[in-house]
Length: 221
Image (cartoon, rainbow, N blue to C red; front, top):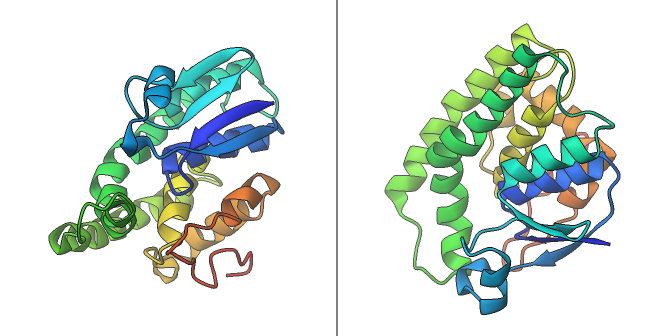
């Protein structure tokens, strides 16, 4: 069986988990305390980052490259559209969430509230938390604008762009940092994603010392 070395609330790990689950690829999840930089872990990925996927005799790192490999190796059900223009839009939005959203929101909220405590790096920086809480409103409004024009984020079909966005938002939802009342269309989109079988293991995550809110695993939230 394939192995995925991961951290439960990492949006990059969650994106890979969702891709694997959507394609019904069984994988053993192995939690990795990457910040401790264990020598065996560094042999798997000298960059000292998760996720790391071991599958088909290969060891792969970097979530974007892993997801592209999964898509090419296991093309059904497809998470990438056929046309070049549509594939560009998926990649653009994946980049938006893994770069811009991550830097402006995820790193300011999730990392300050959870990662610092887990890694014993001190207390959250209130300035960063305020910055992230302000920035997420802009991003939720951008999602609402996209969904006002499309059925899914990148077009008429669900793609990797939706999983990238849901990976970040689900991690933040675990710590109650998403205002789902800000946009009904965004909430409805997330409810559709959340109800997919691929999302079940995500909703079952438990992080010691950080119990999720009651609505986290509720499909009718």
